[in-house]
Length: 278
Image (cartoon, rainbow, N blue to C red; front, top):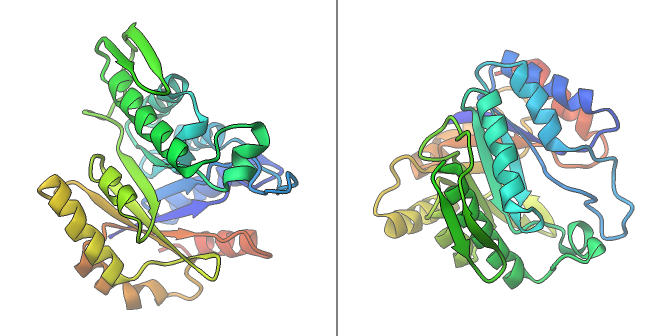
C-alpha cells in the first residue's frame, strides 16, 4: 500500500500547511491531502480555516514526487466549471500528481446551510453526480455540453487539458454501510470508505474493505486500476501500521492515509508524525 497524510485545512498561517506538505515528501510519504471546509461548525464559530487549493498549489510548486489533493471536496457547493479550471491548473502545475477526493460534504449546516446552500442529502447527492459529469466532460478538452436538473452547460471547449488522461483520478468518499456511495465510486477511480463510531470518525475494518471491493468489482467488472483508501488515525508509535496493514492489503486496500483528528494537540501530533518519517 502507498502511504499518505490527510490534514485539516485549519491554520492561521497557510505557510504551516505548505511546509508540512513539503516536509511530507522529504519524509517519504506518497501522498499529502488537505481537508476542504469553510466553517466546520454548525454554530458558525469554527476553527481558523485557510483555502486548501491555494496551499496545495504552493506545495505542488515545491515538490516533485508526492501526490497531492483534497479529501474531501464537497462538489455540491462548487461551480463545476470553476472547479474544472482549478483542478486542471493544479494538475498541470504538479506535473500530473493531483487526486481529487469528492463527497456530498459535511457538516450539512456548518458548510452549507449557513450560506443557504442545499442541506438535504438527496439534493447534495444529485449535485455531486451532475458536478462530476460536468468535470469529466470539461476535462476532455473536447466540445462539451450538458443539461441536467441542476447544471446546464452550452457547448464549450476547455483548454488546456489536465496532464493525466483520460482524467484526473477521482476518489469518492462515502459513509458505510450506505450502498449509494459505493455504486457512485464504482463509476470513478477510487473510494474512501468512512465509518462513524460514537459520533466520531473511525477506521473501517479489513472486512469492510473486502466487502466494498466485492461490490466495486461487481459494479465495474474489475477492480484493476481502482484505489481503495483506508482513512486511518495518525500512527502514534513506529510499527503500529505495519502490525495491521497486511490484513487490509490482503482485503484489497491500495492506500493507507493517516488523518489528523481535530482535537487538542492534533497539530503537534501530525508534525511529529512527519518528523518520524516512514
